[in-house]
Image (cartoon, rainbow, N blue to C red; front, side, top):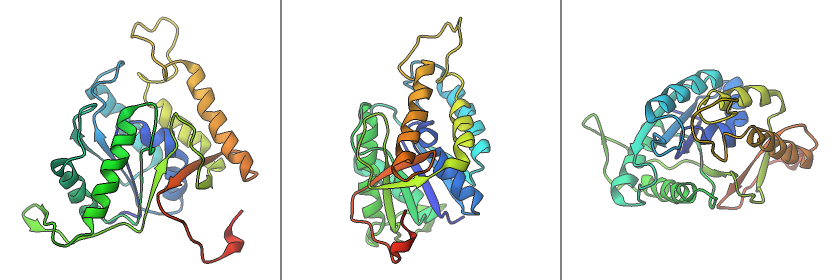
Length: 239
């Protein structure tokens, strides 16, 4: 299956938090959208890798994505090396996405920036025909997506582009809350409390979307950064 849009992020729930509205928007538009999680989030303080897998599956159903896969790199300890780059190259060449969105360039969680660089390097290498990869014994063709964008996560980074997600905010919120062990901890919860399990975290997520929306005069939006200059063919399409 060829994807129009691939969200390739390091932890289950990164895609939903940073781009859940964008995912829902393009699924609704009939695009083939997929999520690739690099790790199982097995080092997370709350829940377990198996529970996160179940939560990620529920979130994927809410968003309506065509595929969701986990590459099972080592949470916290993955490296930007040839072994992991080749795993990502195989995935990119398998799905041939037009656009890839990955983690923030720099963030509070060290996995985010490291994953962003790993994916960036693999995307470039994926376009080099002399790097050979195989899927089920068949040689894969070189392929490089047209565009890579990065999420804006915990650390505020000035966005290069802002997308209106107002009609899809509720879907985004439900997809995040599918991770019941991670967000909105209830009274009496016996697991350790974390930065994101506090109900205030969801309020800050809504506030960020509202802030981005204000800049383009809509209620909710998501912001992204780009490593290269972005161009348009029609100025009248810009808000």
